Image (spheres, one colour):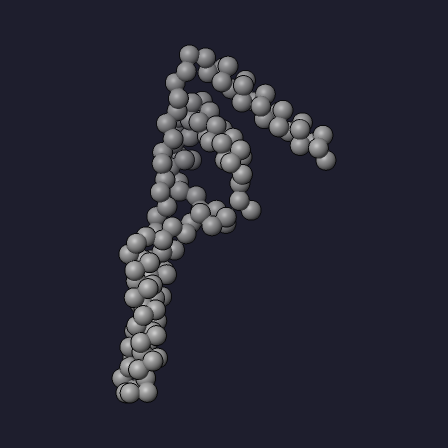
Length: 130
């Protein structure tokens, strides 16, 4: 299940406060790229898309020309292999991870209190709504 924009913003705020409170632990946690089941791990690059399209063209051409010669079946198999490699490359492409730098503010206690009060307010709203 994908997170809403508000939940993503809240998650970013929590991560920023973690970085401000304990930079060593925060950097060790945020440096690990997380793959969620929401589909954010699939970031196809132009090369992988080009390989998939090229493989599809080779596959279709091999099937269409298979009546002419049996050697075109090898072209179909090659097209499938190229398509498969393009798909694997697209799935293993690194996601763009932007490191979050802690914001230095004059009142870190005020920032934490503001976030915790917002979290409590969101919790109350959800509980009262159900």
